Image (tube, rainbow, N blue to C red):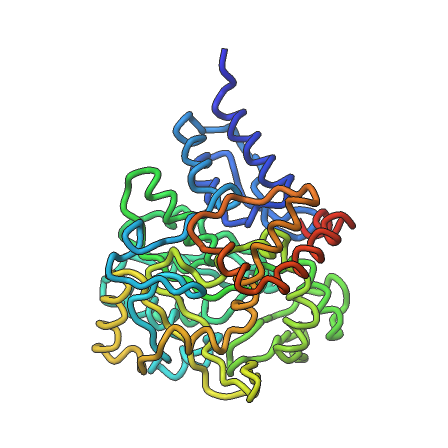
Length: 414
């Protein structure tokens, strides 16, 4: 007698989580009503069984095809992405690129860069372009993040700004609604795109952003305490970025006191080093599976590295599909966005971390495999070719990853 589908799905999930391959995207909760995403002991979002399983054989097959902890496929033109798109080796499928910003000054100010995703969410819902947008915002305890439904400009404004703390957009009940949109991390966009393909259903409008990884929730707690709030004290308000560009990590205490840290201090010193292992082996920090991707269009110094001086925000905006291109063009025509055409190379020129991640990932994956770690299957990203073009750096990365995995660092960041 074959093993029940519920047991097989649980075994697959346990394998993904146990080997550090889980992104915490939440897609699995769409396949089984008995699953929910909650924080584990390491401070990462992980699926846990909270009720009886509703999984069947189709759910098991779909999980294998869509879970980004098992497999991720690049959206190559002619194979899922727009046939007319070009495939940039580091930026993925591209139909058009712009430097962009929201024309609404409040959305631009509150957003992490130019406020373009918040502006698109507000415009798309107000015009009936989509029924709703699934996004994220601070929870009642603002150190934590929850998925929310955006249907108004006010809700888009309340959700503006980055949240460098675990969230699971793909677990939201409306994340798969073809009449809606989802703003999610690249892994969430990939999971929802693969899920719709596996189920033979239309995908929602997928909006994503450049992502450097998901830090542990414990990192936020540590940073809050470093800034002077007592352990366990719940802030009145907390934001990671936005309210300027790049914006400061800011905490407002119960008594009205306000403390903050610069982007370099918060992300570079505390949050960035605490990202989960799966993010360190991610082939797609630039949202290849989305219809539209946004990221910081940093100003750079003479070495090409971003300058984090406070200023009005600008986004790099990438249309990857005809649907995404049409959305941006109509938003520009409606006066929602101000844009200037740029090239994919201009985008990547001010994203040194994304460039390095992509070109050294083949070495990182090799080092992890040799050390005995399991990694997902990545197809179509051209990682070996990129790694071969930067062979010395790839070898150094492979050696460093091998040592890190063997030292047990994988277990500490899974």
